[in-house]
Image 1 (tube, one colour):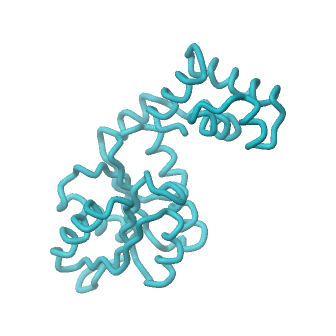
Image 2: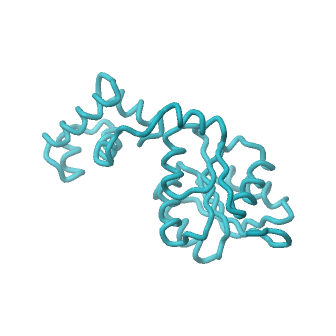
Length: 207
């Protein structure tokens, strides 16, 4: 798709208002890009994209409501023609793989120059993929997430220190099932306990 003489309509989703406003101001300096919608929560993204007929959505990963990766999956399912660029502060290889599986066309770290972000917006609209090369190399070296969806769900719930009984109640599982999921996750991640399993999985972007 050619973007010549066409204004690219952008949705910017970022929960930190100062960062969001700074990115919007920088992108607004580009002659062919206009930030037409902003969101502070992941669960506001789909409605904002619908309401403002955007071409490209720039999504932070860590947001309340739902993550940028979850929002990307929603957008891809309902508005497959819309291009998604995922931004992150954390260069975690697992995030890259998850973002691509969710339908993102680009994955960049937030400290990239504004000119690089603007160019990524243009490239994804033209049908290209843009991936931070350092993260791409790290993701290949790291390999796939070894955890199943259920193991990830239990580990995420265990991150606040909940007991097995509390996890079982929250997830509608038996305590024995919770214990089994945690035990398998600990074995797969080659760690000693659930706290280490949560930490390692978070560091790799697997939760």
